[in-house]
Length: 416
Image (cartoon, rainbow, N blue to C red; front, side, top):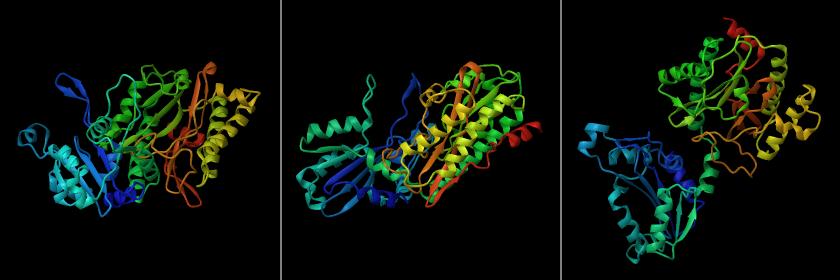
């Protein structure tokens, strides 16, 4: 699979080029500890290797193409403390490169220096372009490894044309294969079990962080991790989109908004559900909920390949505008921004807000979130309903359809 991905990637780069991707390093957390390692998703997409300090080099020469992996050899002392990691043979098997093309990372600089000098031209021809996974520059933060290496290359070889490869990888990663779809389905199923536990344990007097703990329990039981910081927001807290404090006591009569997901094997779910704390919606809560639910369901029914993200967002927004007028919240269309202030959805995959060509029509094989919401601070009501859908030839499939969202189903479940 990863061989095929690299072959597909190389179709989009210039002849006479190299491409470098870095797995990354865990940043330092304290004097003797690091944050958990999270592999660079573009690197993983092309190699399947989830390990620190590994580099993938792809060469598209004038005469041949070849991929190399550069990594640390197994250190017997490190094995005692942290485990072995991949051997060269294991890395070759996972990534699909030849064993002879897996090399000690200490040789990377000299290998590339030789590659770009005259001595290797007989093997690959002239190399004049280097593609790197160049992150956007962020003020006051150190350069990424890719940015540092780009400076290293141009200092030694001023003729090298440095190009970013994010757009190429975004195009490729937008379309999911069967393995990726199954991985996301697995994450969604774990998330479903977590939400069912939340519906079973939610009641007045509990705490938001207690509900988060209930969800994390299910993840731990399934060897999964939170895909992102769980949002467990009651009452007016739910009108803050990225509310993360989760420190309030849950009150009778309120709604609770969950935005959460499981991550398993680097692929994630992203689901939102809104539940009545005491198991029963009030008439007003139900009316608002039904507007959001209608938007969610109609958009999923309407979504198909060839639609642009702009059209997708506007379609859902128009439904919410009509519903908000019937609820007496607004009179003019533009007033919807007071109660709905985010986009309708995003691509989903190796990243929660996954890479994609957002200016281009949605392709077959994309997985997209559909997440309309209404947030009425003056009434202490925030409602969002989010599903993960797979775009198909003639429409889309709701991968999270088994996570209940109808009012009658939620109330019946919670009544148990």
